[in-house]
Amino acid sequence: MSIEKVWVLAEAADGSPVATSLELLTQARAMAANVAAVTWGGGAATMAGTLGDYGATVVYDVGDLGGKLPGAPVAGALAELIASGNRPDAILVPATYDGRDVAGRLSAKLDVPVLTNVVGLSVDDSTITSEHAAFGGSLVVKARFTGDGPGIFVVRAKSFAAEASGGGVPTIEQLAVPDLGASAAATVLARHAEERTGPKLDEADVVVSGGRGLGSAENYALVEELAKLLNGAAGASRAIVDAGWVPYAHQVGQTGKTVKPTLYIACGISGATQHLVGMKGSKNIVAINKDQEAPIFSIADLGVVGDVHKVLPKLIEALQARR
Amino acid sequence: MNVVVCVKQIPDPAAPGALDPQSHTLVREGKLILDDSDAYGVEMGLQLAGDAGEVTLVSMAPNQEVSGVRTALAMGAAKAIVVSDPALKGSDALSTAKVLAKAIERVGADLILAATESTDGYTGTTPVQVAELLGLPSVTFAKKVTVSDGKVRVERQTEAGFDEVECPMPCLVTVTAGVVEPRYPSFKGIMAAKSKPVDQLTVADLGLDASSVGAAGARQEITSVAAAEARGGGDIVVDEGDAHERIVQFLEQLKLV
Ligand SMILES: Cc1cc2nc3c(=O)[nH]c(=O)nc-3n(C[C@H](O)[C@H](O)[C@H](O)COP(=O)(O)OP(=O)(O)OC[C@H]3O[C@@H](n4cnc5c(N)ncnc54)[C@H](O)[C@@H]3O)c2cc1C
Ligand SMILES: Nc1ncnc2c1ncn2[C@@H]1O[C@H](COP(=O)(O)O)[C@@H](O)[C@H]1O
Image (cartoon, rainbow over all chains, first blue to last red):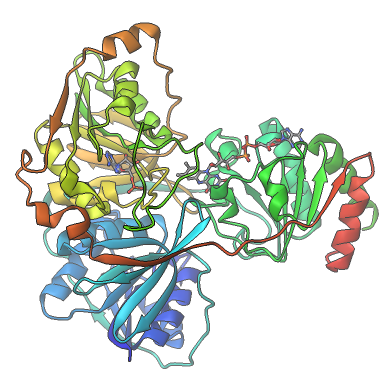
């Protein structure tokens, strides 16, 4: 048996649904006959085709938010819809900044729990079981949702593979945002995008990441150079993002991107569980670290005990020579 | 300006964590320390509160633990509310948020700060739930916070870069570890912290119904706990000046060069 109705938050980035939304729509199809997507920000009409292709038969569109941060208005609109009697069994939310804000707000409004760090979902006899990565991803905890729906599940990227179903164009239903008073007052004044060249971190076939072992912000250029030579993307540990060496968009791990490339090269990264959870799904892992005891070696297919300042320049030179 | 900082006290992350085999909840016995992630909120709060204002800490702890809170008091916070109750065992993020919201209501804050996520639970939803329960706006993932004219200005981290967000106070802001450099408590601070007021409250003191919090409110039943799929290590080579050649070979095998 399955459940009846699942909603998926389809967050947009650059005018398309984020990859995790499509992964979640695919999974939602396996869980329920009735799948709807929720959009905001004004792109519903443009995205409807894709959302339908991945299984949404209805798109609930909260529309343009007038610069407001999405958390409160999107949760407010969904709570109204639910109050009107349209109650899904589950709401699947990509683990993004805005996704978490919507999920948290909606949970408090509906007085239902929000289940986070979800990496697996299944339905058995109308009961939803979720798998969670706990302790920095070292344990997998399975839990049964026992409350009344909707269960709100915040799901990590790449937990499911996205597969189009070839569904038709869904109907779009506009949702109104109720008056939320002060709680929706946070407003975006300006957006700043950092420049990016080469493939996206979470889509690249090769990811080269640097950590504190690089010694300084300047040395990150070695990581970028190696990534470029391999047509890959440059990643980072949180330590060097917090230190301000590189922008957050490069962070791999629990609070950053989840990557599953063909090859991941970790340079001067110790291998904390919170970093590993974001990259241990890589098909091949190479690690360069001067400490033989570094935990990263326990998951590396090729571990080089050495100094990144020596190994990286030589490696770069060797690859340049082959071009 | 009065700032409330939510601070979580957690088992030392250096000591491996454990789940209780019976209840499947995190074991939170013994000494707890200030979650490192919350040191940033405390520092930010101290800087924003200024001389005319003060920082009040709010913490929910299972066993009346205050050692982590004392660390934050030693940094300079004025006072603390610590909520402890056996009924809170097994609390999920929402019931934690209910408790924190009730405790914060007693203080009357212009600004509430929390971390983007805790080190041990890392749901990352508790603070927004607190804001919703209090009917306040929130800005998550701040990497810079300034205050003027009754408003906060936040540089909010995004996938692409950052957004400049403005929000009227009172409001809640979650801060990342990049936001400020936390101070180390001074000896004087540590001594002073010993006599700073710590208000110990129970669920009943807050006027909350015990059946809406703790395991009773969680609506989730843990059915199994297993080690994540292990991934074995492979070859280890010690660089003798030629390790880059091994890497090139490896790249060749993968047909990446
Ligand atoms: C709630 C929470 C969420 C987190 N989320 C993330 C996350 O998303 N991503 C993440 O990465 N981290 C995350 N962390 C942080 C994580 O715990 C680690 O602190 C971080 O990953 C460490 O980064 P690092 O490996 O660069 O630095 P370190 O741990 O300091 O390691 C540096 C390594 O470099 C090596 N080294 C030094 N010099 C050289 C040299 N010359 N040549 C070669 N090697 C050298 C050292 O031996 C060491 O192993 C999170 C932590 C918490 C609490
Ligand atoms: N028990 C608690 N006491 C005080 N603050 C908390 C507690 N739990 C969570 N928080 C705050 O909420 C943030 C996010 O926590 P979490 O939702 O567990 O990731 C933490 O970093 C704290 O700032």
